[in-house]
Amino acid sequence: MATAFFLMRINDHIQYMNKIEATLKGKDDFKGTDHHDCKLGKWLYNEGANEVAELQNSKAQEIFESLFEPHKRFHQISKEVLEKKQAGEDEENYREIITEMCQLSQTITEKLLELDALA
Image (cartoon, rainbow, N blue to C red):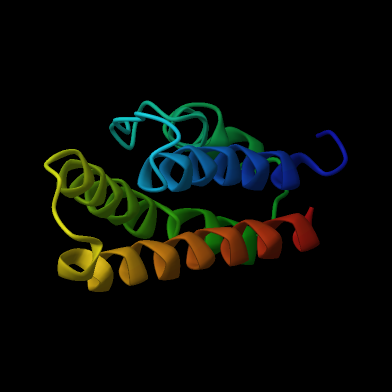
């Protein structure tokens, strides 16, 4: 496994988050994707399980498995945020959703950092 492999997954997630932020600022028109279709999702639902299994570490396996739910929820929430922005809703009306989206993003990043530390 390449050095900094899980850091590359973090970068994939950050790039996705940057597209959302640019859209919320009116600088992009990103619509979001399904949780299976982003770079991180493609990894999670394909080669990720094998790559984590190669670590032969039960803690890494546990962390990997704990990524699925927050990642799925992140995509549900971010899609909702982007739809509200596109509909012209005032950001004050969906600030709580943005907060949850950011918290989920942080959770995903922290889990990937934990995996990187175990690699």
